[in-house]
Length: 581
Image 1 (cartoon, rainbow, N blue to C red):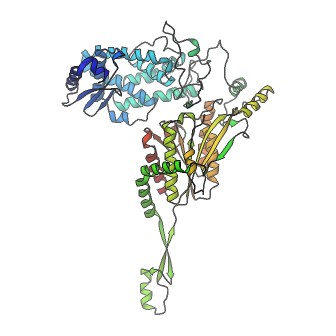
Image 2: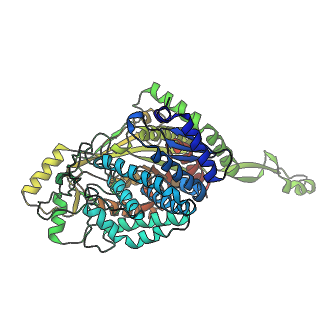
Image 3: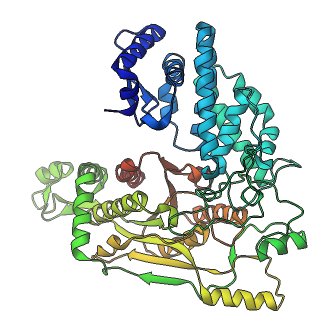
C-alpha cells in the first residue's frame, strides 16, 4: 500500500476524483497516487505519492490536483511533451503553469488557498535541495518565483541569478502576459537565449559575468553536503565564483552551454583563473577563436580494431540487429530501387533490345540486337561515426551509443558501405602538466593556448576497410570533451577516404569542455571547425543525446530526447542521407 493512500484512505482518492470530474467537466476522469507524479494522462490525473513520514498536508495534494486540472483544461500538453528535455522545457512548463493557474483561479477563486499551500510546499522542497541544485535549476526556480510575485530568500538571492533576472525583466513581462502554450514556449526560449547572450558578452550587463565552472547547461552541481547557516544563507565558500570547481571526474562533465552565466567573483578574493585566462585578461587582447593545445606530442591515438571480445561483440550485434533489422531491410529495398541502371547496347548476347528489333527484321546479317545491364553504383559513400566519450556519457548513454554504433556499422557493412567508428575524450597528462609548469616558470606567453595539461585520448574502434568489428564493444568513457579538435581529427581521416560522398555523424551530450580551457574559446573553435569541414564537402550531422546543444553548432542536427529511440532515430537519419542524391 502506498504511504499517501494509507494515511488518507481510498475515500480521499475517490473524493479527489469527484473534484477532478467537476473541475474538468469530463466524466470518467480518475485520480491516482504514484511516486512518478505529478502528471496528466488521458483520462487520469497522477498526484505524487509521498511516504508516511513526508508530512504532506491534504491541502497540498488538493493544490496538486488544482494545478494538474488547470494543465489538462488550458494547456497544450502535446506541445510541451514535444520539447526536448532541458532548461527551455522546464522554463516553458513554469511559465505555462502560472498562466493556466491564473485561468483556473478566475473560474474557481476558492482554489487560491490550495494553490498557496502548494507554493509553500514547493518552496520548502527547494530549500532542502538548494545545495544540490544546478545553476540552471536555481534559475528556473527564481523565474518561477518572479512569475508568482514571490520574494527570493537570502539563500536564493545570489548575484548571478538576480543579475540574470534583472537583465531579462522585459522577457519576464512577456512570460507573465503569455496567452497560450506556444507563447509560453517562445518566452522560455527567449529567456534561455538572453542568459546565454549575457555570458557570451553579446548583451551588455554591468552586473553579470560568465564563469566556466558552472552555468545553465552544466551537468555538475555543488557538493551535496554544502552547509546552510541557520539564518537561511549559504556559507560564502559555496556561493562564490572563486571557490574551486567541484571534482568532475567519474562521470560528471561541465558542458558549459554557450554563454550561460555564473555568480560574480568577489573582488576581495584572489582569482583562480587558469594561466590562459589570466594572460588574456592582462593583455586585454581579443579572445582567440581557435582552441590551440600547448603541445600535441602527448596526444594518443589507439587503434582497437578487432581487439574486442568476440563473445561480447556477438551479443551486442545480436541486440543491435534486433532493433534495426526492419530499418535495414527497408533501406536495402530503397537503395536497390534507387540505383540507376544503364544499358550497353549493340551486344552479341544478353536480352533483346526492343529498339533493335526493326533493324533485325530488315538486315539479315545483323548480329548485335542484344543489350546488357550495367548498374551504376550509388553506394560509393564513406561514413564516420564519432562518439563523445566524456564522463557525462557514462551509464545508459554510452551503452546506447555503443549499441547504436554496432547497429549502424553492421548494417552499413552488409549494405556495402565503408564505415569507421571513432571516439574521443581528453585526460590529464602528467608529462604535459610538467611542460606547462616549466613554460609557466619561464614566463612564456601562453595566451594563445587553450589546452594546457590535458592530452587527447582518441580511439579507433573500427577503421575503414576492416571486417572485424569487435572493437566497437570496447567503447567506454573518459573525462572531458574538446569537440573541435576531435572533429578535425575525424574529418581529416574521412577526407583521405577515396569515396564519392563522405558523411560524418557526431554523437554528443553537451557542449565542448576541458578542465583547463576557456569554454567560450572551445565553443567558437567548434563552430570554426564545423564551418571548415562543411567547406570540404563533408556532410556533417550532430546527434544530441538528451541535449539541444548540437543546435548551436551543427546546421544539420537531430536531438534525441528519449534514449531508447537513439538507434532507430539515428538509423532513419542516416538512411535519408544515403538516399539523397
